[in-house]
Image 1 (spheres, rainbow, N blue to C red):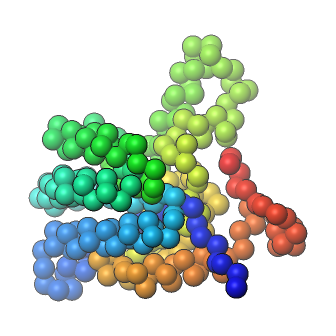
Image 2: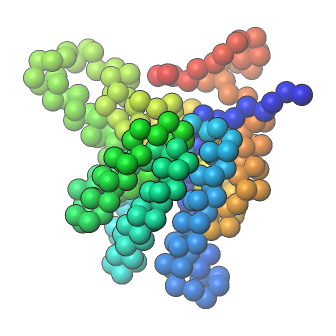
Length: 250
């Protein structure tokens, strides 16, 4: 029996926490708390299946526009989740990495992030990436600025500014690019998430609100991925006759 292919890297927009709470007559923060449990379930599923990388969009650079009270509660939830999960991540060999502009966070949250990353740095299992105060346009702009500084300093020529050079300056440059993108909550857009990295990623959208995203929903997403033919610009016949097909930049 042929084993269905598994993605090495899964990226998820966890949408629907607020709507989940509203349907139940609860405050929005209750939906975010329920969403944390969905994160735990998803991390367990990835760990048990040998997925290498899981990247979660926790807080976008646009989310600062939300009501101040909700943003404050989200930051508090982020701190408490980090403090509670460090032991579990250490026990399950999960390495935590946070991407995004963390300078906008208060000192306590920045300290919690640094401590969690340091505590799990030597872990060799699942790499759990949390995108917080992150935007794909910010990521690309940051990389372009890094290359422009090198050109201005004479360390590289304009002609050597290639896609590979730009990718090397971006978040997640040392990790495989996402194979599968999942968005819960029914919306069908990528909302400024990993704009560069999702170039050849398979997309999966579900109506399921994030707090309800469980093992069955995860299996549905993996099943959809397994039925795809990943061509990366080639024809189907070329893929069928090739031993391996790699995305651009890998």
